Image (cartoon, rainbow, N blue to C red; front, side, top):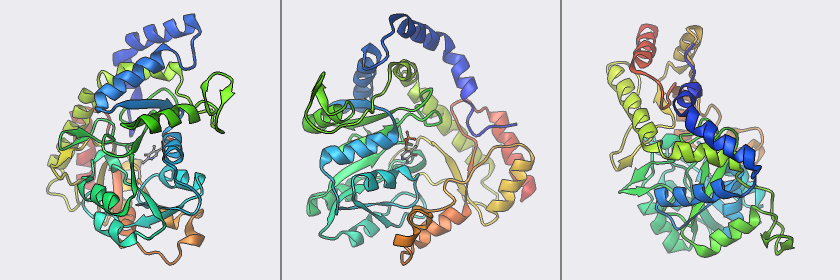
Length: 363
Ligand SMILES: *Cc1c(COP(=O)(O)O)cnc(C)c1O
């Protein structure tokens, strides 16, 4: 059995450090917004090269609170991609705005800036690009559109912790950026967690308030907020993993390059790397017309693999009635032909050789 993500192997390596930190938190009984969350926020801001980070309960909340803090509201249109996890669009709906889905680049699977430009209307107030599968998207043209049309830029970095472009971290460009610490993400907690990064003092203050019942001072409430805090237990785990995130991402890159090298002669498309930045391979996703055959063959051999994402957002049951006239040919093609193979910081070369040999025999 080869899993998509081997979390146990990663835990074994850092068990002592995490357990020492957890024991201290349990002994002190300091569970909410205490020293580890504070320290993690500082360490993460330092790592990401941003002025503020704010720990929240999930990546979904990080997106939701960012949109609220920036002032995106009912009636607004927010341009994003349909080839992403549902949370990107859910957050837009939470604030009453309308997701406007545009097509992706066929090579990187990231949102296509030329399509963004065509979709801008007087109601557009924000753009949410997703650094999908860990491939950083060049935000230069998108930032330019934002400046021209007075739009806010919110980066969905749920899959790109540690990815850089032009020497800058993903998440350091937009007004606010959202990270997820879902266990299988590149920086994963032992449960749910998320983070907002921003260089704006105002947005940071608003998000701190929103995550904690609209309050900056205990029992004094200025706005209706939420219970959306990163907890101390998760912060202990995240601090231990943050120290090692570059080597985790390097290991993912090594594995991805080995996959691509071993499959270079096969009739399938290995992931494209645009060399503008550092792709951190949250997923290793290939394209093949015989995707379903490969999927079944791997499953029969107990090799984990998955389709991210089988149904683009505009075709999901929840959105379909509102988008039945929308056609996104590249998105639809990629969804019909993509397949993600096991990748994580702890997969070894022999495992990758076994998987590629199996794919070779299937084709
Ligand atoms: C995981 C993910 C989210 C949501 O994060 P959660 O922590 O699970 O709420 C948002 N956007 C994308 C692209 C994701 O992959």
